[in-house]
Image 1 (cartoon, helix red, strand yellow):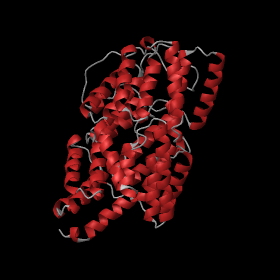
Image 2: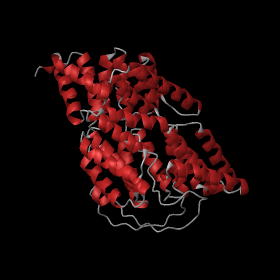
Image 3: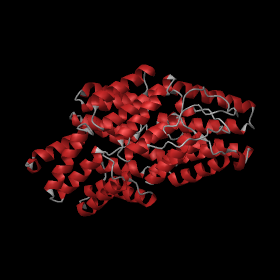
Image 4: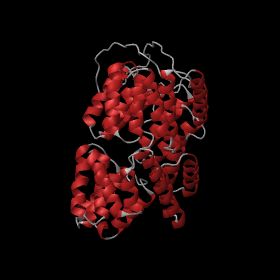
Length: 457
């Protein structure tokens, strides 16, 4: 069973109010209200400041619009090859296309586009290219580089929405949660809007403040005016509710997203997971098959594999896990660090020794709740249960308020292996109480453990 993060929670959270085109330098007054007073109790007045430059928010375009926009930009740059901001925008579009399509081959193209932009306009006046490089580094899971580039971009333009957002993303992924909270509060003061609101909610959720996260997302929903924004925020709300085991509420939010933007892949994925949790496996498989057909990624492929496995379709499950390994090889060839994904998937569905190697490699790069959990699970799968429990406890200590059914399940199974039946019973029951559908295979394994000798009170 995989302990996966919500896949839409980062990289795709920008407003979709403009069509992609050549970047236009324009002074903008901020119009969105900060969520800080509603999210964390801060009430200090603030002065809005103009953005120094506005870049086209390619991350919020539908796939067809994005492809058309890329074609338009490519033609424009043939005619105007010295347009530095055009090259920066093309790089950002390539990053987004790679993220949404599951094709990491776009990342080297993005790298070249940002490099060309910086050749035409030096870094000290080119925050768009620097912020784009930060987003590219984050997409490749090089979060130290993402943070460094975002900071450089912010020195040029303190109001760069992309840089502010990527800085939050990088701090979260590095496990620096207190700094991430400070960073998202700063972003909220400088550039309040849907990209910041959704990140604010995720940081609060990681800290265990689900009510605060929901409040922030409802404010974001009120400021969502385009169909793309409505779909994005509704999907984020749906995932938040799914994490808490509120499946009917999550399905309602996913339905809102799909009414706004039919075929919205993250909403289809969320709906499929919610159907599976509710026991409607036929519709769950149908949704997830459509998702991986259009936008494959390791988490989505593995989720579909686990659905097949739960239905006894082991051959089909093995096909999905093999596709994960193919994707991983392609991603690595294009500069993406895949050790966290590899550790989780291989621990459950492949090479346990390889999973441990990958998890240890990731741990050398970043100490976060997710890497600690992955390392704990890989150690457990290699029979090193006492050491595994040490890292499971680290995961809990990194974010004490965070309640994640997958983490609880992993810790419970480790405790079970160590013979601590009381602790195992506590954590496995907590996992199922929080989200009884956290995984098609993991929930079944937890129930089986509890129905055995752990079932005694």
